[in-house]
Image (cartoon, rainbow, N blue to C red):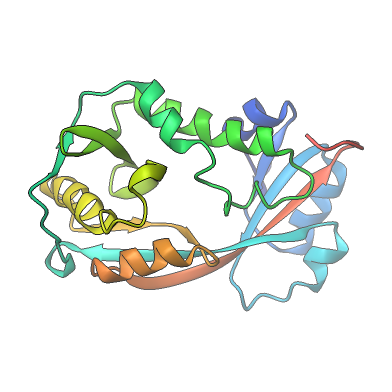
Length: 228
């Protein structure tokens, strides 16, 4: 692989084609995507000139915000009925995840079928579950949410639809953040779509600060009349 493209095997599994991350918005890198079949993801600073990117067949998919929080900044919300456990099945969290990621960039990509976008998140969640990187969050003794992570990065959070809107997100997530900080991390970070206002507001209320943003572009250099 060249210095401009990095293979993305997690997406190859989902889309059934070669998939890549583009490491630079420079012309040489963009030209290489014209010569290579497959799917490409390019993340760039919002201030980068987008004209060359668009001219090479990329299109806007999302803007991702990175909230970060140091241990002393974390605000916790107590609830005696909230708990946390490592004991839980993948079936439970897969059920919780159904329809939970509709604001994600692949759900909003007109070239991706809804079932493909759903499966992408389920596959990602399964990988984290099998790696032991999932905390199960409980309310009144029942698993109602999960918190998936890698090192100091919060990757996926899902909450059962029946408890949404009941003020449980803050105590559930802050409890999991406390556990992650207890592993010795000085800072936690996550990534949130700019249109996911509920998640942005929740992380802000927990003491996270918005650190940076990237614009995300997709490109499909392959024939797919009906999408993937």
